[in-house]
Length: 390
Length: 134
Image (cartoon, rainbow over all chains, first blue to last red; front, side, top):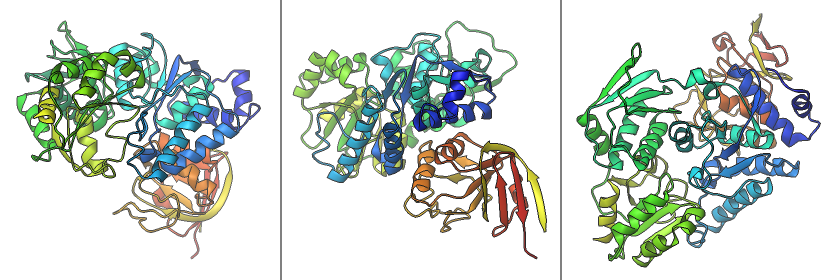
């Protein structure tokens, strides 16, 4: 891999340990995947913020970076944490968990990250189409590559962090046009009626696709929320970094073909629901809500009241809540909570007394059972709001 | 008996120690206890074994990228392996070995190494020497 003289000096440690270790991470990954050089990035998005997932190990590493004066060189946004920014969960959760969580966020601030605390940083500042970026958080990666058209590999927390400090990434994988082409044609022959159906489709496809990039036909009515749900789910059950939507009937010869029918979707939806009881938490906002989703919830809930035995969380970033504050107020006055900086996947559901969660997100439905062992009801947003308010 | 295996250098450095060999991929997040260095992944062939000061040989890593930080935490607490030998390097283990500064070589047929063998790793040149008592 070619390094400029300045990059070599960083590699040799002339700028201190934080930059040296970051450069070494990028060079080793680059060598592993056949990169020829480092290329500048527009932004980095860093996962590994919730203490629930990263634990003490990440605190030690972040502290070492900060103490050796490591600072980010490009806009670097961070994923949600285990507590909300209004400190509602902080008052319920054990103080030890909360303190360590606050320490992680403080360390990210110290190294210069922008405390977006969201998995949908693209709603705050959308990267340019065609820009090279270095993003972790699988749902943001697939969204950026497929819907925005910016270019990123599926980074992990540590490599996105290293890219943020150096301001560059090795030019392998999805940073090269030839690697962004579809290798599977997916024909969807099922009628999809809601964002939850799109999520179920994504989960079904992720299992089959693994790391492959699909070209998907048969989704003429797919909206932004639908595609966000589908992508997040595909990146959950599989390692899919990108998808293409075919709206014009491209012919795609010479590649593998998959057909998805109604039964595949129904079976996936049924498998995701593990409980038929009443939920104690209804959760919308995985991935974090867009302005349109906040508006939709406010329209569905206007004039109604959330049951006293159900918590309704609508999760998004502080930025979007502020932008949509009139709609957020409608949701809150109906008894829901527009919660910022966290979500049901990265907080401690069991510690919060949650036994059964209802959600419109296939990604959350998949993880809540695995990570928290709670019961799951998976349904479209309108049904979720109905159950919360019945 | 002495055999020499040639692989690909990943992280530079020299180490000699006793081999701890697994035929299964290893998940660091959730699979290794960062406070003791013991493998806690149920059903793993090294379940209950401590990786401290070993020459840790396994096919490749698996699972969350947070696993890299676990290797760093282990090294900070003096519980890290002396070196890592993989069949195929994957990003989680590579990044972990880089930040924890653990010599690492891949491209090695680890079935040639047995538990308890004395192994010498040259991470600079990617050479692994295996010494087995008769």
